[in-house]
Length: 263
Image (cartoon, rainbow, N blue to C red; front, side, top):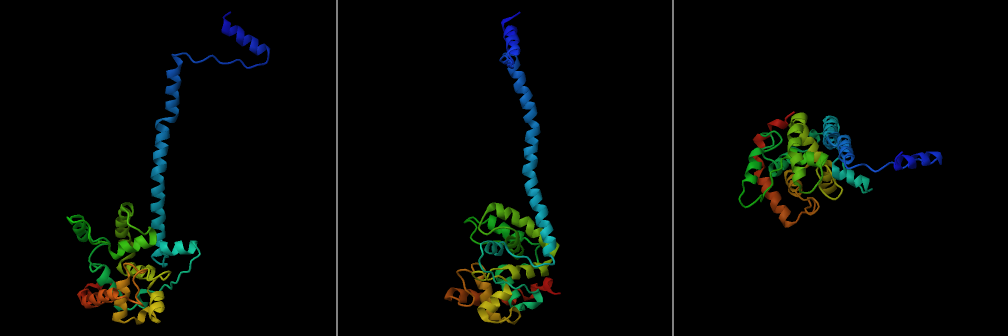
């Protein structure tokens, strides 16, 4: 009987589990290959599946919310952030018919003059920005792109956010239609610290309903949109007044391009 066998017998007689002999040089590669088979390709496939599952779930959730928001006016992500941090929010949702055409026209003039002509994304404007040799000195965001950013995404500049914003804008432009897209935009746009939507802004800055806004007041509100924290519609600086004047002078250019909003 060999030495290893005698040790094993003694260990069994004493009630002690015998130590297993170390793996031989021939056994080690076999064990490594078996472990690789257990945790290799199968584990990698599961990991890839989980990575792909997260954006898929996110997409399904966004589309489901989009269907709900086709009938229910949504909050913006900025509004949700203020609610979560217990900050006040002023917003009263109103239908597009409850908003002055002066504001609709001023916003289109300032933000997206081709609103009725594209399908959520102005490819011509995007191409011009990309091909600008001096860099993107101007934006190419449409009202649809700004709306999906406000409702589903996050503020700030990011290539990732822009990559999500473009297909979502095209999808919801088709799902909601132009009139609903404009309605949602004017109800979630920020017009001051904690002031969201045309109705709350009109009451806060001018003491009237959004349906009663004059052309001058509408132009001031449109001029404040790019930066409503630094630009005030109710207490406009000289710069804001100058921008509003240019918007008011150009509103006639889009008057014949608003057919998609008739309803």
